[in-house]
Image (cartoon, rainbow, N blue to C red; front, side, top):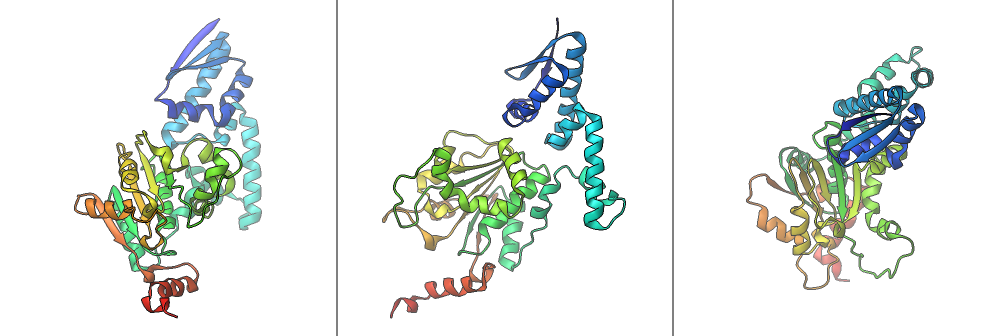
Amino acid sequence: MAEASIRLNGQDEARALFGPRDEFVRRVRTATEASIVLRGNEIRVFGTQSQVSDCCRILSEWQGVLANSGELLQTDVIRSLNPDVSEIITQRFVAEESVRTGDPSGNSTFREASTNRRPELARAGSIQPKTNGQQRYMEAMQTNALVFSEGPAGSGKTYLAVAMALQALQAEQVRKVVLVRPAVEAGEKLGFLPGDMQAKVNPYLRPLLDAINDMLEFDQIRRYMSNDVIEVVPLAFMRGRTLNDTFMILDEGQNTTITQMKMFLTRMGVNSRIVVTGDATQNDLADGTRSGLQDGIERLSEIDGVAIVRLTGKDIVRHHLVREIVSAYDDESSSSW
């Protein structure tokens, strides 16, 4: 029996090569009939000389794809395991695009999809600021490692931060996006929620998922999340972690305590960036509890590499009534009947 080993660059590469729920490695086992075992940061391959050779060739090819694009797609797996099937898929893609675009060859769209390893992020890359305040916000995120964004509902704090995170992922400036939110109820107690842990925390994370859904297709989101490229988690789950090469967004920062804010900010690892968003007028903390957002802004505003961006009602780009609603609630005279 022949044996060979392939060295990996950590567990991130192992997860990418094995695929969601080990789908990719099961396919290569079936195709080559070789035995594959992961031991630490090394893949061990067993079988006949021909089986081991074929398996190692395919896995090495996948490593090359990962090194060049930062991602291993199902189409890459199909192409390496069955070139004939890959050609059929390509022909079908070109035919569908020729009907959709009116280009008889379909080649222009196919070339674009082939050269851009992450074409699904194009929608995020096309998002542009609509106000001067949003322009300052996006410039701050581009030039600073830590940005605090404070402003009213509808001013684009979370939406633009998610778009910037996906743009950084597309440009391979980061390898991972982590979206975080404190699990704080907005003024009413919901009691015990049914379901498993994911079902219980989903209502708190829904606003972040809505922003992602507006920029990516469902299948693309599922692939990124199953490969741990995009992670959406409650704030409490961040304790003890160190995240390198990661774009982190903390939404609803006004609902964090000082201790929670310190815990989150100190998760920053090498080549990571953080954006903290919040609205001081929507604080759901217990009376007398100082907001970690306000405390963080005051403590860190003078540090080089930290930017504070304050958006106003002029930056609200949601429904036109939202600006009027915010203005009415901010107007002290509106509280007197």
